[in-house]
Length: 209
Length: 152
Image (cartoon, rainbow over all chains, first blue to last red; front, side):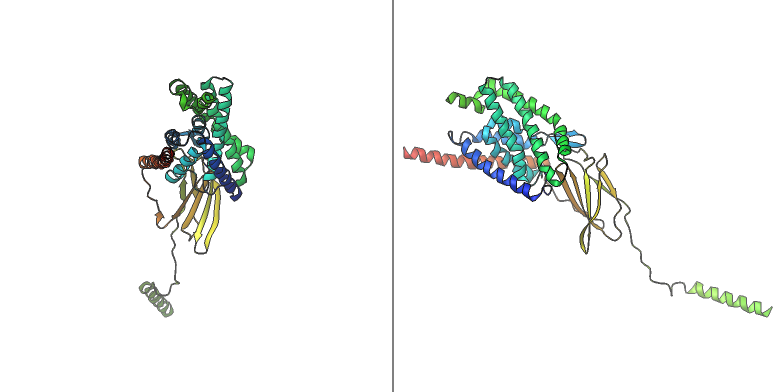
């Protein structure tokens, strides 16, 4: 899922950085608006750690190899703060595991962070409508990976490849990850809803209203 | 009869001459070694081979770098090529759906492996950075809280 250094054309790299910097500013302000960052830091740190390490779980899918991403889980648990969390996690991954590269960091954060925000949006609206949380979590986990694969395909066409082919490969090779992450996200959400409901961003907002 | 004798004597002298001075009047010759085949192996983190990935090989000679070959890895992530005669420096780029790895090597000196920390150390380092970042965040928020309470 990480796009490596040197693959992308300059305009895509530039757009990725612009989107990432803008979204970082927005999400940081929005996420810490009414509770302050102090209460969020432990949760964000733990989830960033999980994201950082999850990428080491490789699953061979011929002809390529994919790994866990957990961006849907981050979106569901952290809300908008998933974006800065992913940014930090990706920075560490590119520095320590040489996944992606520093110049592709903007694009990679966009490709994983935007789906995380989408997952959060879907989860929140779904919860308000009273859908079962575990099921919603599972859907969001799978959806985030799907959206990431599509975004990655869009970025890769600038290297001159046919969009449909790249998108097919990207989505097809991530189908196992979609299923695995749907299960992980679903069960984590079910667990949190039972044990520690205030960990989920939705309940806080519902309580406040 | 006499003529034949003289002829054979001359022939013998000639043969002896060539036998005693074999090296004197040769042209200068050169020998150059050649590695006939290079194997390139590409694999993903976790050990799974990069099958059917695009391979681009650049030759590094004194006149600069130039594109030498393009191809694809096989099912096992292997790629074979014959080096250019007289060029020992190569840069290999392997690319597949957004994954990319690059390696520069020299046939005479082998490839330079960059020393890398073991994986568990890198994981620990990552957590170290995270804890540090969390700590910095905590300091800032604590300062804010202090200010708020100080005003009250």
